[in-house]
Length: 463
Image (cartoon, rainbow, N blue to C red; front, top):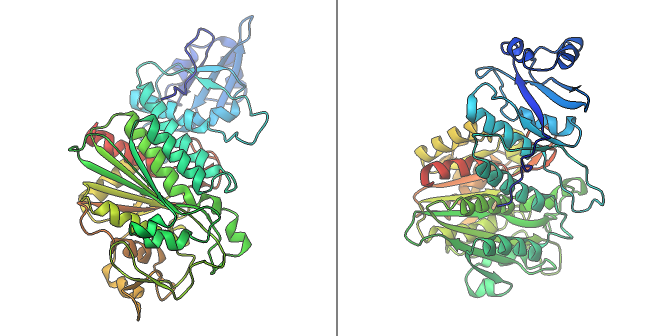
């Protein structure tokens, strides 16, 4: 894994974490001119404020950053990340521990790296950013591993569909698999029908590049089976139930489920967790053509469940259904799927808090707890069985959409649940995968929601 930290050197400018309680002590440790600058600006450790001071003949830099006490409401362990956009280019080091000790120091370093992400593929002159030297006493390799996985997912999500079609997304998956010597195969085009993936084929057959399923495995065969399934719709027009143009502006990110699965898979393999990992990525483009699937069509699924198409813009759950059925055959210990699936989830929870659905109360509790502990929050919604009747079809086993406007995220999850019957525990994450505005650790744009929390959970369970 590439180390995202700067190489240690003698010229790094120190950053001091300051609270109102610790300000008097820190003021004794810094040059008088920096202390005087802080006094002149009214700085005394207020959370979120910073001071950049110079001292000495060579005008060395010293940074003061106000942070919250450990038990402060709304405490943000990534607050150091705000300095990435506030400081001039150069090397910096964290000179003391924030409240919370080594764990908080690691959070601050991760927040810096996550804030330092920039999507530069189409820019001739990327911004010069400040760089952080890895703090002493933290697991720098782990922090870089997590940040690199997030950066990978963000890069994939940001890339527009003209350069991130099904072939490019497959290539990205194969590159990750090859790097860690995973066993990989791809099923594409009409071979999907021959090998019983009819829903993936139906959704993607109208695209300019053929639909496909990427399937790779890594780890020891008899280790606990962990399977990740990611929705890979490289662009979603809505199909014949076409979206309005305003709703298509963000549809390059409809493959964010696959990108998130890849980012998490990279973290798992790089850490050499004691699991047998499987990654399944159904990859398509939902396009309009003479052979587009239509409202009212009925298709078989890999599971044997027949599906009536109530709306072609509910295509993500169709490709996930075939992939989940394949994953379920192995009876994995944990089966996680990721998808930018419903607008209803965003209406209910907003962009920052993805809902999730889970068949195990114990696993759901672990997911929620790890989400809070690593600032990657999620919120459990119920797999409310009475709502299954909303998916009824008069001519098939199920419809792909509900018969009314209510509970859209829940009914989508209930649809997927029909295809998972053997896994010991399954969780479905309905992610937004985008930061509408910049916050520490979360630059505006693509986001690998849930990847960090699940890595933390799996690392503690199988590390």
